[in-house]
Image (cartoon, rainbow, N blue to C red; front, side, top):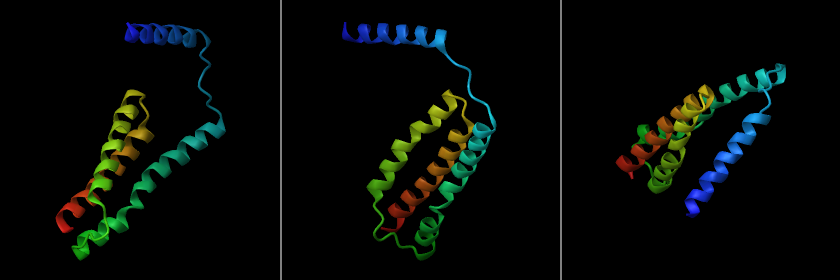
Length: 113
């Protein structure tokens, strides 16, 4: 019963939002922000590269928490599906790159801890 009430509320809210939905802003500020966010999404994961490089060149992952990097990988994963569902390339590509870097640190921590 409780689940049904929640679903009913969700559908009513969706119907109301469809009637009052404003068009997506598309001015120069938003376009610039979209570009900056996309660039930040690509550059951000590269910031983990020094950690990956150090682990794999020294074969030492001392001080790197395997559990923490596994959890980071797990909680980041849904963002890929979120980006796909909302058709947001910046979220999709940024998250894929983050996941690659997270996985490399995790793998290095498992191999060299």
